[in-house]
Image 1: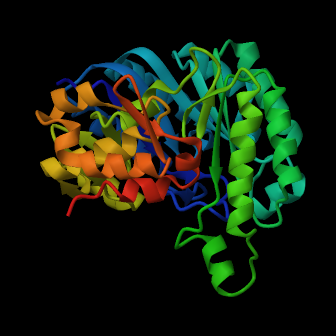
Image 2: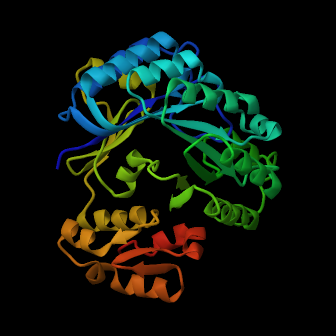
Length: 373
């Protein structure tokens, strides 16, 4: 089956956020132009030239200057024809009208902004470079340039964050001219500033119950708006779901280009080298810039199908499962499904198995139940 999606990683940031564990580097003194040359070369290796979704993430793609951004956009659009969703991640304070005009000119039709919170004190704790007004300016710039789908990321369970703080940020987002909200609880990841501060006793997190309460508030508040939940952490107005992210949740294949990017092509899951210079050197030597690669077994593919698919409100479809793996879902996971249904964590409607509201709150526990021995 032809790969119809691609992810591109731009590992540069103007500032490193305290909670972030993605592959990223402070942009100053980095070989950005050399990196773009290597990235363009890697893209040219792909067999597919026609894509249905393209997602450019990071790091921060908008950390590139206007010339670098245009060079990247030119390369993408001359290498691939994108007949569908073309998404770009952006920081609100970097989304100048000039940059957003460039994005629009080259066919970008969806922007995902890392807002995280509207509260100035919390933005400071997170190490973000934008302020509240920047968020409004960025959304206005994107609309003025004609971008037809705008998404905001919001975080909860942050240090010093109250449920009122989260409710206020969510309320401001709901009342903006946007189409999609992604909202995630903070996870302390090793190698982040937050993790080190926490280990030294310099960071106090809200208790787990408050995190769960914030998540339940999120689902309830958005259920009363035009934003409909379609995945554990994602809510969209009609026709504004992230088509690219659905490729991941449906366990379909996609290219990953750039340092630290992951891909899944012809049955192989791979991750590229992380350090920028190592990635550049591998490409310049004519090698695939691979750090790790493996071919999931049939059992692993079936496990992935369940815990990725169950993230979506539509859940996992029995017929699709059988077509994909040549075995019925019951033959593999019948007992597990039965047990989780009896505990009111799963529900079944017209052959679709999905999480109940309670199942969503403890999603990871549900997913673990589908690990085969």
